[in-house]
Image (cartoon, rainbow, N blue to C red; front, side, top):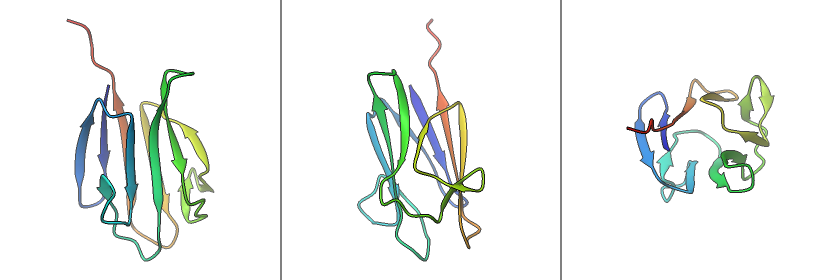
Length: 99
């Protein structure tokens, strides 16, 4: 499965990765420009055969549907906002269609 991650200024496609890191640290797979530290992890959970989005630092400024994000099963499209910021994060899951 492919995952498309986009923010206000960036977009990347990840194929076949079991773990993707998103955050303010330069070592993350997808980097965000925020005034506070954030680390979001997307990882494949083999028990449910789907990806899970985790707010790894537990930062209350990471919002899903205006509520602090802790853990979320990835749907086809997920939009994450950041408190006191115009930055948004869109995560789309693309399922490959068999030929």
